[in-house]
Length: 114
Length: 113
Image (tube, rainbow over all chains, first blue to last red):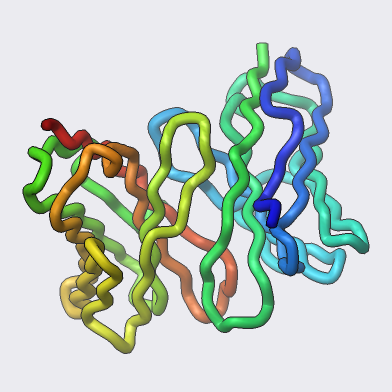
């Protein structure tokens, strides 16, 4: 049973560019959440997708957008990259059944903005 | 606004002894709390959780205690093992924000032989 997968593993971009990160949820999960983890900090919630719609959003600017596909996979897009966007981007998946908030995380994509 | 705080950035403990990790929160609406463990180059792994209707939850070597009046929870690991060396994150969620986990900054645990 494959867990949460993310691609790419590492990415280097320059300021002003745009980036797309991808995530496939754990089998049987239909909800995908994205987090940004800066160095030395805990993950910060960006947004959550369920039924192909953004259901929850954290305190991130509109430069951060996402999408969920019918197969529940998801993309995170960041436009007009800033140096401060350098971080580990984590994708987490969960199921609507079970009634818990337990989320399963992928290994993350390390984004470096130069 | 950091609503979940882990004030100890690091903890060193001898193998076989108890590790106690602490977490404080400010949002009284939080009703579900989780602990995650993270190794380098891996995503966080779920360890244990507790609902606000309980004050203790135990799973093997891991026990989480919740003190709602103090807005404080702790994770006890007994006995500590070398494989427990990792960063531990406390996280919380509120009923009106299902799935939005708010994390503390983490505590680096090092278990020494």
